[in-house]
Length: 329
Image (cartoon, rainbow, N blue to C red; front, side, top):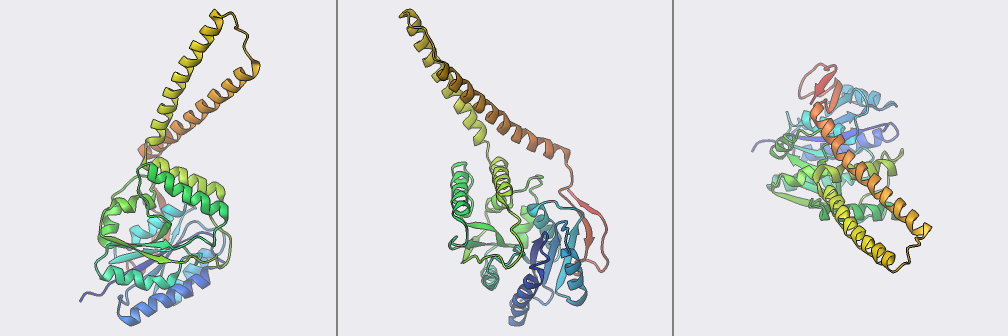
């Protein structure tokens, strides 16, 4: 039976406080899988530094020197979580039979990685890590996250509920996923589109071990908007519906004004005029902004700029020497 080469891809951004804990915890999981014979000794941990401003890359580089299970990639600047993860996936697919992605903050339960591998060995191409509950989240984050999943469902996109980017992808699934070449790649939406045999593993998410969250409210909102506009044109159609309803209301209001004029009662109220102006103005600005969001995505796509640039590549399974400034489109 062919040995399974597993890569655990870990995007990192300013994670110096938690890196050592993350490294030791993931290494223990990987060495345990190797000792059980579930994965090959060629398996590895792949840390992707997304342009960190602290000592994260220094720690990754140091780990690659004394531990043959560790590889690292350094991006030339901060490209964002999704693109950093994509960089790791594109690198790992070249020498791995399956890849597990997990964040460096240790909030995702690493003990279920063994179950991920067992599901893969039983024939599943995609294994989703799904949170069984969200008790560690604030009320605001929990309610907005649930609202986002419901909204995406109404937009026609079937996301895996309470799943982030903790998942296993087989080489075949990953190869097909990487054929999606859009610049704004929303991985949580793309993976369910692949259609391969999939399953879920449930776990309880823990509190962050150290450091600060890299997803404040502004980033979460931007991420949600990116996901919605990347997979659905329904917001544009919603604007059309609003315009249609506004036209009907305007016709009704116009008829009312004519009736009032014929009755001789044409005095208009200042408050109603101002409220109407503000309402229509707000709807127009919102509509223009939403349309602009779509146009902006088209603008980014047609330029075909690289999604990320690799500054240093310390992947052992690929090459012995680092590669400088490698561009990926």
